[in-house]
Image (tube, rainbow, N blue to C red; front, side, top):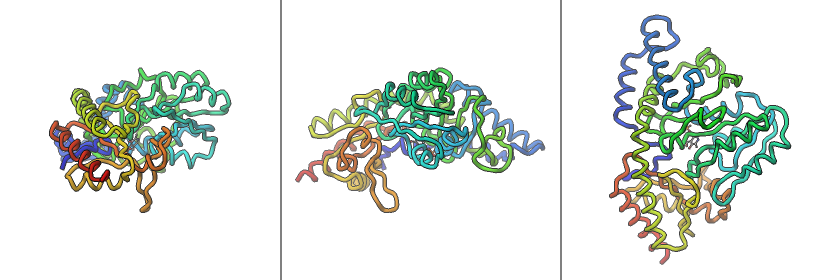
Length: 368
Ligand code: PLP
C-alpha cells in the first residue's frame, strides 16, 4: 500500500518501537515507592525533560494525557473559564467539547484562505467579559493552514484573556516553540509524529489552575488522574527526539506536494487546492475533484493501493461535508468532494507518481 495519510496517523518509527519495548520490559508504576517504581518514575521524568527541551517549555508545565483530544478537552474545560472564543476550523476535539461548555461561546470565522482575522478577534474581545480563553490551532489538520498564533496570542493577552493553541498537526512539520509563541497552553499528540497512538500532552503555564477532568489519583501534580502510559510516553519522547529528521523530510515532502498540485492542475484546470495560497504545512494538500464524492475517491484510490483521507467526515453512516473547507467558503457539494493527501517520512517519489497517475485516471473516468 502507498500510505499518503500521515495527518491521520504517521507510521511508527522503528526506534520508537524499540524504546517502548525496552520500557515495557522494565515495567513499573511511577507512583510506586519501591525500586521498580522509582525506576519507572525516572523514565517518566526523563521523557518529560526530553520533550520539554525540544518544544521549549519547562518540564513541570507538561501534563501527559491519552492524546491530543484529551489535551484539547482539558484546555477547554479544566481552567473553568467564563467565555471561550474558538476558530470555526478547529478540530472536533475543540469544537465538540466547546458545545458542552456552559459559559459564553463565540466562534471566529475564517476567510477563504483559512485565516482567522486579528481584527475580528479584537472586536470579540472588546465585548467579552469574565475569564476568557481564546483557542486557535497552530496548523489545520485538513488544509495545513498555519495561523499567526504569536500575534493572536498577543491580542488575547492585551484583553486579559488566556490563549491555547492545538499544535497537534504542527509538531514535526514546522518548528514549534512554546515559549517563543507566547501562548499559555499548547496541545500535542504522539501519533502524529511517528510515536504511539493514545498518548499526548498539554503544556500549561503553572499559573493556570487546571482542575483534573477525571477523578482518581494525584498523578501529573493532581492535574490528570490515572497511571501514566509509561511506554507510550517514552515512545513519545523518542519520537520527539527524532523531530529534526522529520523537519528535513518536510523539505522533500514539500517538493512532492507541490508536484502533485502542479501536475494535477495542469491536467484539470477546474481543480481546487484549499489553502494553497496560504502559509501551510509542507506535507498537506486538500484537493477538490468537482462532482466526485470524497467517499468514492477514497475507495477508488484504495482499490489502486493508495491510502488517502476523505475531507468529508462520516459518522453514524451519514457523510457530513468538511467543516473546514465549508468555513473557507466551499459549497456543500465542494465540501463533499475533497480529499486530503498528507505525506511523511515513508513517502517516496514513486508513491507520488502513482498517486498522480491514479488521480488523473479517476478524473478522466468520471468525466466520461
Ligand atoms: N487536534 C488535531 C489538529 C488533530 O489533527 C487531531 C487528530 O486528528 C487531534 C487534535 C486529536 O489527537 P488524538 O488523535 O491524539 O486524540
